Length: 74
Image (cartoon, rainbow, N blue to C red; front, side, top):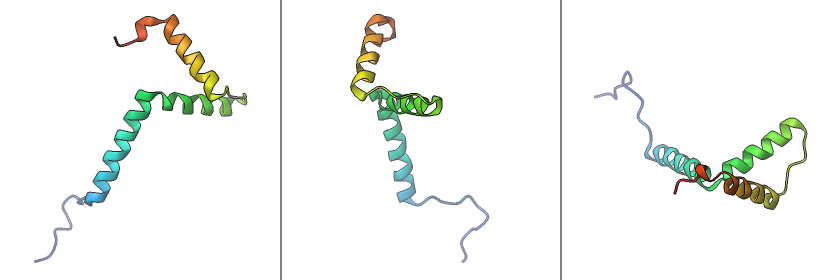
């Protein structure tokens, strides 16, 4: 018997694990704020501005959250 070449292609288990790991990585980066830092760097690069240091960025972000407490989950 020959393999069914007309049916949907089956993914290798390693591809499934990689896709799952990439999704988990994205989720963790969004929750931790790491993605916001990358967005800041990209925006500065695009606009030709010098980016803040990571420490300045985190301080600014923390102060903004304190000024706007309704954004917190708890």
